[in-house]
Image 1 (tube, rainbow, N blue to C red):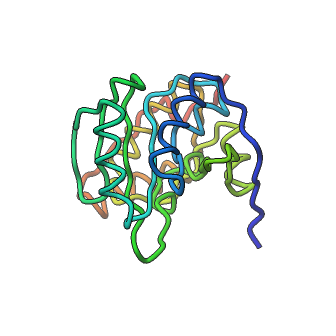
Image 2 (image 1 turned 30 degrees about the horizontal axis):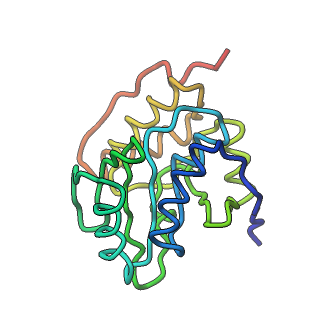
Length: 193
């Protein structure tokens, strides 16, 4: 049985105000990924990943562009990257599929597998939360393992650690999925001081 945590999250007025704008556009949306990680570990926030049901995806995009003064930076089949002049940062609008497969199931590290709802509660498994607060990278697999390897280096610079087993899983996926053999950066394998 997986133990889930659901706790209120303490946000600055600025961050709450920004999320209020998004939740007013789509009340069933969820803030996922790095925003939650950054809040809990007191890191700089790079962007907001806002996951919405597929049925509300187009409507949410249109309302964001209109009411948040957004510029479109990029589009894929699962998300649109916007820059909101009103909020002052990037917003990724992520589409949750019709089959109910939750977008966080596709995230590459356990530290990103939580979400914030419109009531400002965050939810994630207890094990993933422990990885997050201890800054431990546990790899869950990825369709883009080379990007996960690059992210592991970025996380390392922020004080996160990865053990040899998880690093080898990434390197193995790089070879199997992307056909690229990577020699790991040796600093990832050194103990943290």
